[in-house]
Image (tube, rainbow over all chains, first blue to last red; front, side):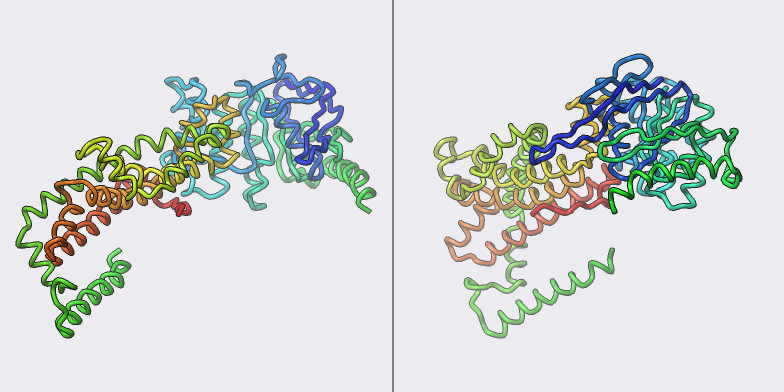
Length: 256
Length: 254
């Protein structure tokens, strides 16, 4: 569904210097697969997501989604940002339907589907509220509903729970899994949290910084549906340890 | 609401009471500084005339204010859309602002005749600049995340401007509208000083020519009230049409 083929990205710094954000990144994500990307700050995780979204162009290599080369944002992909990025002037329902209306793809059933989706996310009764009347967790739920309403085949999530408190974050993780399993979309999920990555993903891509490269890809063999009780299982620990070791082996010696 | 207005009300009342007391106590002559009671009496004595002059000024104010809104918003969108156009237009705007409008008024009246048009133009010139500045500030203050959301939804530059930047700028625009409303009154009076046969500015000038100071003061008070009412009306329109905006008060550009 998503194919990255020897992708590299070089940014031109303000002083004319060239910063290599990504180098030789190759990855295949199957339809309906949940892939998490973890790594230290500055390893190019968010850049990788933006390349797949078509928001920034690649410098070298190729990115394709559903067999088509990505050179601009596509209707197949939807993105959830770290901040909810809701329109402050629109109520919850209009925020959720905004992308479809903007793309001229809103149909007669759009509103009904939006209401159903909001209900699934525990937001029934909040359709006419303004974003500032909602808590941070509820705002992010609206943002996720907004992405899902587009029925994307690829869902890109850039630290979607990064701005939430720890308890809301755990609750939202399980909710996301439940909703994702109904949609069947392929997910690329960037996170700082190793345990979040292991809990959610089929595979965890571990990235190393400067330049951003894939250091390891860890298969998570835990059965679904997932739950927090699995955090006690040996397979969970083994995966988390392997990811942690990869991240620190690469990052610490350079810093010291 | 009432409680927050009370201290201001007390100050205003005390000010007028002190004024009245000072004029009576020190025996100040009326053509130098009339007492508030004398001003009120003068206003009541000629109220139909005062009303006509008020309506005349209000017409100029509304036409000039309306023109500034119609010109400023598209202009602000053009400026915000392109750094090149912005660089080309902004110096011209600053030049128009550097010209004293009082100096411009007699020239315009010679060129365009002693009618409503030059007065509306002067009013417009005074009012539109703060509105353009406020609207541009709002359009450019749109968070980059919202712009990126628009791009991810494949919005073109025009859609981005109309569907994302413009709604985001609404609170800023209303900040500018409040300033522009107050300045429109200033612009209209300046134009009337120079060339008019009606209006509160004209009334002030003719009254002072005959040392009818209370009447001039009555016109000044009417102008102040007009400015305040326009300010409040703009705020009300914002609260009715854009209820999400009035509580999202941005920093009002000076």
